[in-house]
Structures are given as structure tokens and as C-alpha cells.
Image 1: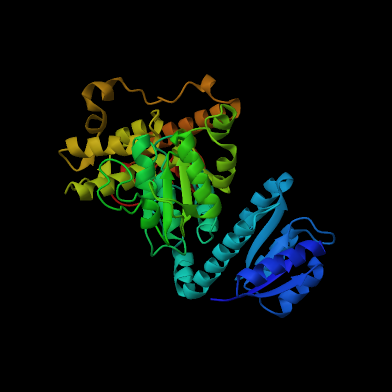
Image 2: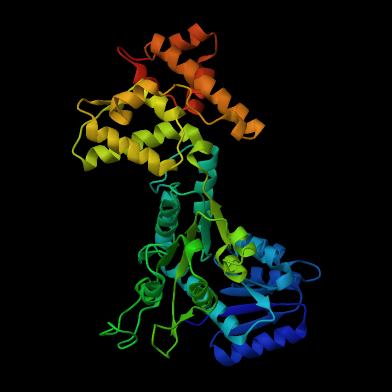
Length: 468
């Protein structure tokens, strides 16, 4: 489908060059403007499918122009042109809604590919308007559990980035739920009806990974009896999730860079270049910036991947989510094992809330699964979760050594432990009656409610009779 493109740049030679390239290679209607203020007035008067704008211009920067377009013409795609020296600002532009950026000096093929991708995105917006509205209403409903400030920030980032074409790098320790975030982004994107293909970069041997990713042709190596389509082609029109990207070997990093940069790849043994229409999401538990310093990870690949970064905190940093996560896993594992466990005992919940989790959310899920397997009643107990010996020896205040934390974080953890311990004892005495508990503690009922929410304490776990 042809479209209408406006090129904005204060350098007239650049305007003429881009107008000639697009005029020769595409069927789009091309307009140019050397003044960004005049360009904005023109955009207000007539709709454009795409605006290609320089970053640094007198009178109005490309960022300001982008923000104005996002406010007044949100359906218009915007590509930022920038020099390498201002690449950080280009990444900022992606965060503010730009479809992509081009670095100067640029290659003709790079310009055409970037514009093609942006126009394809614009067509998808038109064709999937109803889907976009439905996704906007349900954004954040993916199986990511938590109400802590850290998780609220994650939910907000997912909502912002999902409908765009931006490449996303998800970082964080093992077991924090990086794949769940990738699935949430895909499910809330304009590619939701296409496939999400996951590639674990550590699970496959180096000599197999290239063939799995890009495919191969018959006779490419011993055992290649026929042509095989790779995962890149399998994910065509959808999303490719590259898990543990930090473990990729240098040769594959180079091949992946070409795919990310130009949308091109070659099956093993083939001389024919193929094109890929993909959205990329990557994840790692490694420090890729340190990998750059150690010469184990390519800097240019890092910047291609790290357009938008979502960093997941360890479970220790979001302890207020443990109770909700525990109940979610209990419900999920109950259903999978045809069990009917109603609740987690207060003592067991206290242990879950205060213990250390080096394996993060995955460790908590495994712990609940173990408890469900061994539970013979309808309430999950300490013995079910930890076994008799561990349950007897575990302390109620089992939290990391405070000296291992920054002072402010250690103080917050200690205060949270005190609130939780006090509230649990109070609710036990008052049998879960919040009004009576507030009166006994000498605080307002609303304040006790807030403390319970922050500490992740559920009064239903302590009620034995009547209702509050």
C-alpha cells in the first residue's frame, strides 16, 4: 500500500537526497520541509502516514516535533534521523513513541528498510484498529502478579511498549519472570494474532543454533537431507523472543546483528539472502555492559537490542507481592493436580513472606508446588512446604543479613518485618477482626488496612468465626 511521507530537515541537500531515494525506489507520495515549525503546521492541516525528521534543527528539535505529532496525530509513524554522537537521544525518542531511528551517514538500503517497516506498522494500525482498542482495555492482564511499586512500573512499561515496533531487552536475575514479560508484550501488541517463537540461546549447541534460527538448505552439512525452515521464518509476522541472549557466541552475535539491523539473513548453505518481518524481544540475566568491556558481547548489538529496557527486580525487592504470588500459584497448581486446598496457614504464610529466595519467583512457585503435592488436608502448612525438620528450625524473622543491603533498604525491610510480625500476632488474637484489631492497637482502621496491604497480610487467613 502506498502512503504519504513528509521529510523534515534543515539541510536542503539532505532533503533532496532523501526525496530522490524515495522517489526512485518507492511509490509513496513524498513531501519535504526545511522548517520544523512549518512542518508541524502542515501536519496539522493534512494527514501524513509517516514523518522522517532530523533530530537537531533550529527552531524546534526532532524530539519536540515528535511529541507534538504524538499528541495531535498519534496514528502517524515517526522516524528520527540522528548522528552517532546523539544516539542516546534517539533511544529517548523511541521511548517517546518514535517508530525507529536512522543514524547518519546512512546506507540507501537501511533507509528503505526502515521506512518499509514503519509503513507496514502504519498499515497494521489501520487494519487492526478494533484489536488495538480491545488490547488497550485489557493491557496489563497478563499473568504477571503483583501490586508493589516495582511491579506497577513493569506493568506501565509493558503497556507503553507493547503496541510499538520497538525492540525490547528484558534484564534481571534468573527466575524473575522475564519470559512472562515477553509474552505479555507480545499478547498486547499488534502482532498478537501471529506467533511468538522462543529461542533459548543456551539450550542449543553452537553448531546447531544457526541452523535452528536461520534454517538450512539440502546438502548444507552431513544430515541435511532436505531444506529446513528456521525459527526466524516460523516467527514471520510475529515476535522472536531470544532468551539468555548474553550467552550467544561471537559469530552468532554478528549474524544476529545483521538480522536486527537490516532484516536480512541466509539459511545455512544458501547464497540467497532472505527478508524477515519480525518484532524482537531479548532477555538475559547477564550484565551486557560488562560483557562489552570484557569483549564477550558486541557493543553495536547491545545498542540494537537495548532500545527499550525492562529490568525485573529480584523477589527480595518486592516482598509485598509474595502473599499474592503464593495464592496465585496455589490456585494454578491446585487446578493442575486436581487438588482442593483452600488456603495457606498463617504460620506457613509468615515463613513464605520472610525467607530468602535466591531462585526468585520460580523458587516460590516450586515451593508451593511441593506443598500442594504433600498436603493431605485443605490448608497448606509449614510441614507441607518445608518438611518437619526445616519447618521447626526456620525462624519467623528469616530475612537476609541487613549488612548485605544499603542502609535505606535494610531499614525498610526491618520495618516491613516488624509490621508483618505485629499485624499477624494482632490478627491472630482478634481472629481476623480488623475493627477490633485497630482498637487493640490504638490506630485508625484505615491505617491498619494500609499496613496490612503493604505487609501482604490477608485477614481472611485469621478469621475463625463471623465476619468483620
